[in-house]
Amino acid sequence: MKNLVVGAGALVFVGLVCTRAPAQDVPEEVRKHLSNTLEGSFLVFREKVQDDLKLTNEQKEKVEEHLRERLPDTMQFLQMLDGLKHEEREKEVKAYRPKAQEKLATFLKQTLKDEQLKRLHQLELQRDGAFVLLHGDGQIRKDLKITDEQRKQFMGVIQDLQKKIAPLIKEAQSGGDAQEIWPKIMKIRKEHEDKIEALLTDIQKKQWKELLGKPLNLEE
Image (tube, rainbow, N blue to C red; front, side):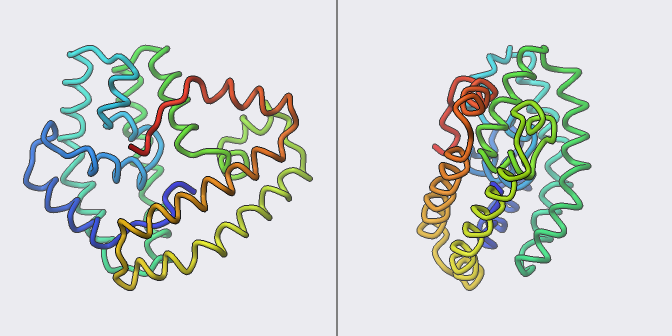
């Protein structure tokens, strides 16, 4: 749910920057695009996330080297998405994303400490938001004891969300100003995320908050 729309112009920008720059020079905005598009642990390439995880200099060097190795293939894929219709783009991303996440997860297990991996997972949940309670890790639903009735209610909220952002996505694909459209999408998304959280019981809300850990603003 996080990757609601990927602006075509943004993808071109990402490709141009990343094919010309070494990993340590990749702008934070580009790293943010990678994280939002490929999801999972790609958050680790964000500077503020690395600081929050308290990576050592050696760990940072390894992470940046891994990013450098991944850039050519990843940028080629993102540039391929440019020009595709929203449905086609989503289909391609869903097929590419699991393999990309698995490869990164293997690397991180060898590079990060257990407590860092745990914290990274918390940040992933913060980024994905309450929508993960319907479409994400099934273990979380089991731990929170989400009922079938709650899942139906969650689906209703998400369907309403999709209905409201569809015109904005269409506007972006038609050449609209992404800097104006994206904040509108994120505002609507946050409103519907709050609606999902409101459907939780008090006990579930407490458990969910514990799973998220200390908040970190990932939108700045």
